[in-house]
Image (cartoon, rainbow, N blue to C red; front, side, top):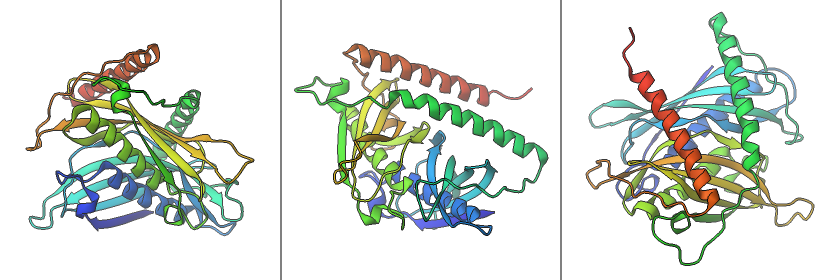
Length: 329
């Protein structure tokens, strides 16, 4: 089963330099994934359901997309467990004046089917037919790995981004940013909870503000580490999306983004952590050339600890890329 979406990129999809926002692309990726996984989960007779986004694996923005280009988003189901669906999504950009096409994104997303009668009830997923025997075993390994990583992220859920008075430039406090958003009907599925793509778009917007404040240049999304959706966000809730710089290399910035949901009209439930992720940005000149990034100055012990953790993630990904780039013997 496969699905494809296409849409031309317009000025309101891009930043002032004409580069399409990473959040716009993430939203399209999620829409394609939600369509194909919902179709699959309703492909057999039984209780009707809607697929909700649970996790997005790391995705790299391989090439920038510009205003006027057409984004082609294709989605394919690659694995199913008892209660989840793995979807592989590819994004191609097309210059419709020259016909040139290029791959801009590859992403892996995980969805769970929620009952239409009770959105807190997770249903079983119909099995998928694999084209070769090894696919199921490979998919099972990916499923177990992401399940473990989701569990490991929960220890950070108590973290809160605190405001600071008169912060110094290049410090964490100087660039940290928050956005408060009232969840309306247009943000939600027909069943009253927020589209994962809407949340990701807001997360990218906040991360972009943090990056721009830190380096004061044009910035673009380079990659997004795994995005974990810890709980659903319902219509009428107020969400606070907070971003803070955690690490800088010579040419990149890592920003942690936390999403907290506040059920302001429901006294029975307290504010909770709904989603979290790390975004990586790069600084660009007006000509689109990579620029050096001002080095982050961590001040507190917690900031220094997060800086070292970010450095570890950066070095690990750098080593992985170098290993992939080495010619095969």
